[in-house]
Image (cartoon, rainbow, N blue to C red; front, top):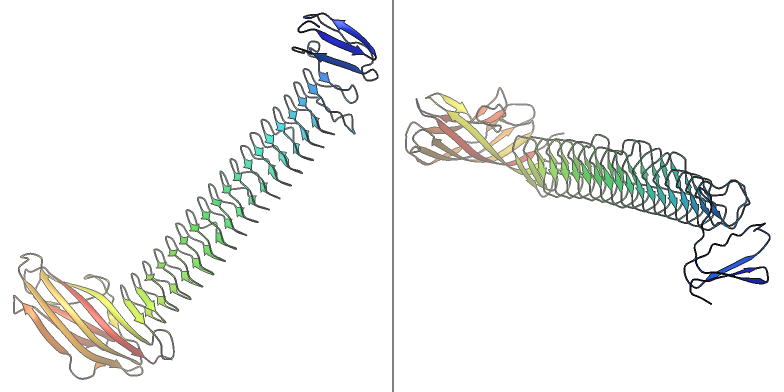
Length: 477
């Protein structure tokens, strides 16, 4: 037989068709079996705008459509869209313009130029153009153009464009979450405000913030713009936590802007820029506060810090507490405790930085919140302090005058009475250039405070800096 020659077996009678010639098959092709073989190219050319189909059962095929499907239960299960295609499978429908179903069963591709490659009972609706379902079952692309579901089970992209679901089970990308991505996992949800949001995996994650995302874990929730939840169980960034992060752990929450929780259990960062690295049941409720770890620690003073320990509290700005049941209540105060008598903070060691300023020969007090501040060392009822103060005065004009003192003593406030010294404080002059410069420790019964009074000289700008240590014991109710 010559090259490119075609043999046609019409029933049992062979016919020889010359090479490069055209064979027209007519008649009831559904009742007569035709066998076509070729040693070279086999070209099948339907008529102008005609369809290529394996059966004339069902509705009319679209112009230039290809329908090779062999099994259908309804007349609509055909390639009825213009230039549409069904290559195989059963009960599939391709009725969108240039729509395609490669295989599988009970799939429907209605959107323009949309494709279902395989799977079972997958749907791309009329308003979902240029979209793809790779495989799996029971997926729906509803009014969602330029979107992709690669596989899995019961995944849904609903009324939103340019989205992606890689696989997994029961995922939903909702209206408004344009550009959203769910890579895998189960029952994850990108809700209405999750523009360009992402869920990498995990179970029952929910992203509702623009450009927010979660990675893994269970019940992760990122509800603010640019929020992030890494993993863990029931970790949340609420709608108020713009740019906030919870990396992992269990039942951790960030509720304010730029907050951070690294891990641990039951930790809450509830004010802007607050941070908790880990631990158990820790709370940062002040801006810029931080907790490194430990248990049951709380920071309510701005810029306060607790590096670790248990049941420590920072109430004053810039304060630090560490150890066990320490309380930092003043500006910049460092509190350390290793135990307690009856309640948190009743037995501890305190360190404070104090500042004063003189520019003339009058006296000035030192404060914990700066030379122009107002926060003094106020003593509460039923309290006793052993104190030690190291104070340095330095003339900023000449840079050649300095004064140094060490002052130690004991003071007490009994009941609701007045603060008073027990004995006389010891004042040690460590050195000075000007005999007029001095520092004195006093008690002020009007403010119930331990004061340090600085004496300067005329026309001399002297900065006074002090480190005050208190050994604190109280018997507050």
